Length: 314
Image (cartoon, rainbow, N blue to C red; front, side, top):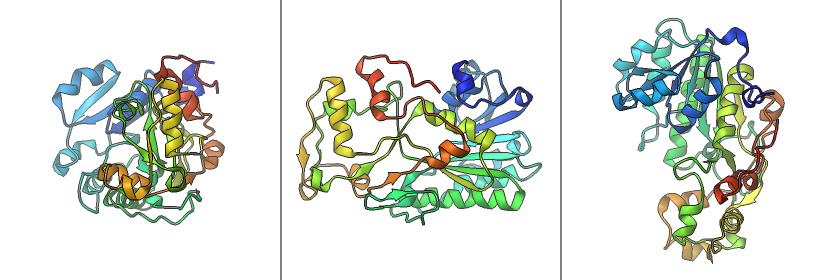
């Protein structure tokens, strides 16, 4: 079977389906590679300079800006299915972008289905406990609250306009060919990590597997359903960087107590170190029937270490 067949690509009857990608950055382009030739692909873009790049990826660009709601009206009725990957604004407690998009999508015939990539941060600090999709959310940071607000807008569209809306809760995304997609840069800067007694569990997903999850959800996602999209690793942050250092042949990072690290690390990084959870991906595997090509960060990071293993075959 081909790589695309493994990915849960849409069947032949979908080839005339119009799929709108909103937020067609790195993950959106990976989605486009999976779907190319299997559906008519459209993408919202606020930058005219991306026209050539999108067309080369087999995607028809549509000019519009999530921060200018009037420019989104043209999206109404265009996409039979929508993959929404754009982030909220960088400040505030709400996400006006998602509200504007969902309002535009319902102006004419709403899409049949919508997949929204949210964040695992909406769970907040689980103190190392396992986070399943039915767990009560406990967003703590503004960044997490904006995503939680976006989820509410997506759910409302689904319930009120009879759209099969699915939400993916996504942890740290990595890939050797993704900008900033490996720990190498941080290791080369010598940035420390927490000592074992203060360390937190983190979760990861390879960018290619996330793209495949988006496509699988288009096909198999259930209405108003949340899916954790993460690999099978259950690692603490320091162990993750130790593993990466060993694979890259770099020194392992220094270990510091939390009280000292708070004076030496950026606030954004410290916010990640204040939350510990282990995400469960059983629902993703059972309902989306997705078999990960990179089930562990070890298998995914090997390519960034100059080793080229074959992805785990699905």
